[in-house]
Image (cartoon, rainbow, N blue to C red):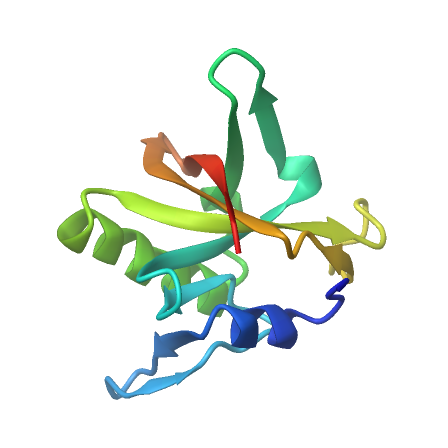
Length: 141
């Protein structure tokens, strides 16, 4: 199965986020990039393919999940911080991400070409100045 819509991937992983009034709600697929997966029992984030690197020795994939340069996207960055904080406070900084391939990597507003829907990467969140990365190993879904 090839997933091309974010809503399908969020549904597959049974992901929700928290609204401003504290209620659970679906993730807004247009401008939020993470939430809590009931299926994985941890926060899950998105990682654009061109914002990932692979370590052949450690067999890990690292994804940029938040960048202070994204401050012009207030909904998405607040949502990311919520789940990053949750991961540190409740799960020892462990979270997951899946990889998205862009139709056009140079576009200011990207569109999904397809999503790697056969696995997520699970591992540790790392803050490095204004950037937040997630370093994970693959886990089939």
